Length: 234
Ligand code: HPA
Image 1 (tube, rainbow, N blue to C red):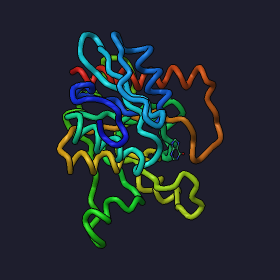
Image 2: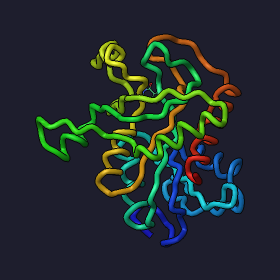
Image 3: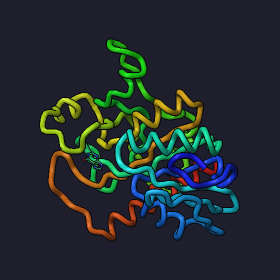
Image 4: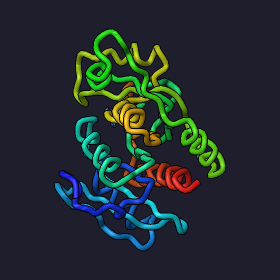
């Protein structure tokens, strides 16, 4: 076991889907995987391993934000040998052509988190990127499933509530949406040599107040899960 994961080497598959919400991990395990075994419950950060179309796949809740997610990623990779991590999360839309329930494949992730600066020092701005092969696979898998995706740069915010941030500027520079994890995922992918991709569903609008119903959110969430699982086994 590691500090935050009460499992044994071999309990996790090589590929892990990583939602922020542990209850989404449970939902994915119960509705999309066969022969499921729960492999973690420490701090209610639920983890499961099962099979998708005969391939072993795990799903692990990461909590919100880069600090929490980084704990699970470090332990999954260093103690349980995980090779591929696909984040399945939600985001707020920033770009004008990104709408509620759209699925975004985060090609890169800008951030105001200190993780990149604390890694490289002041003055150097590292560009955290997705694994291209995973990204390419997800893009084509989505096309085959008939699901439109938006691909580009997103913004991983250090704070959910941040009145000082100039969202209009991010919009002007083509940022598609905002969440709180992807820059940390991609930075760790580069450092620890695992393949990383973020697949995101738009759950809210930064410039607007249109809302989705619970049913609509579930349907779109399922699109994101299907893209991610098909990418995981491709
Ligand atoms: N901001 C940050 N993180 C998010 C958002 C948001 O609007 N929506 C979903 N995750």
